[in-house]
Image (cartoon, rainbow, N blue to C red):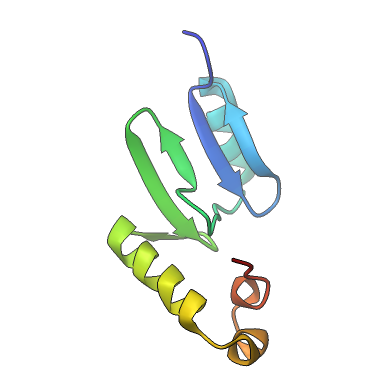
Length: 89
C-alpha cells in the first residue's frame, strides 16, 4: 500500500501522516484531535471533525466555525475557549 494509512491533526504535533502501526501508537499516546480548518481525521473517504478533542458532525462543525467567524474580535479575545482566542481566518 502506498501513501499513509491515515492523516491526523493533533494539538500536540499538528498534521501527521501515519502508517497503520503509527495510528495505533497515536491512540496509545492519547494525543488530542484538533483542527479548526478542516477534518482532524482523514482516512480514505471517511473524515472526522474534532475541535479540542470533541467530535462534531460536519454540519455542526461548519456551524460552530461560522459562529466564531461572525463573532466580533473583542468577544473572541475574551472567550473561555483557547482555540477561539487564537482563531485566525
